[in-house]
Image 1 (cartoon, rainbow, N blue to C red):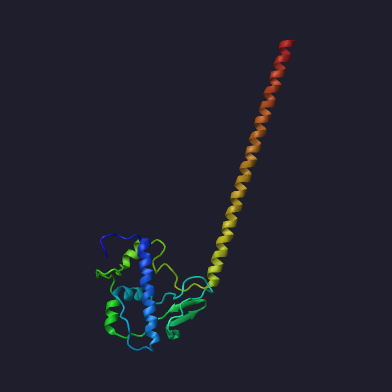
Image 2: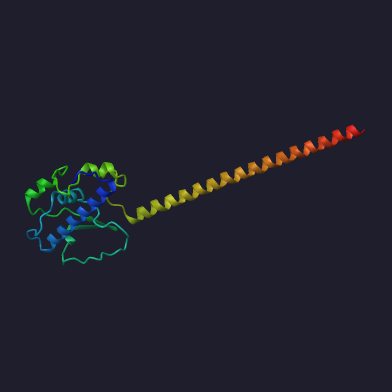
Length: 198
């Protein structure tokens, strides 16, 4: 990494790029029939894969399709389907030495693809801690939560409308009081004028 500091958005994009490259390499390895890997993973890619074991493989729009067909591969053995969620399973180990390096907490090499485990979690407010996020959320649960949220938003809007209506009623009452006070003053003026004339 060069001497300049990156923003959390740049770190987030770089991490996603590293993870995407690692998943492509991993899928290519499984496309070779489980033989020896043709491309070695960088330490950052190994760490990204290790951090994302058991997390959903596909994130995005439901019903979306991938445009990259890629090489022919059989990845069904490494994917678990739970409702509408696809989850990445832990693949078999091809090299035991790779496992030892993937469990490191932070990459310390000086190449451009190093990513700190802690920098991603502390600087990126969009990504919560994994123990606070449920791993598999069904679309029905999301739909229920969203409808509940919308109902509460509607209730809140109705309460705000009621408050504004009451404020309008209060203003109308104040206007009526001011009109009555003005009318009273006019009548007192007329009374005083009659007393002066008499």
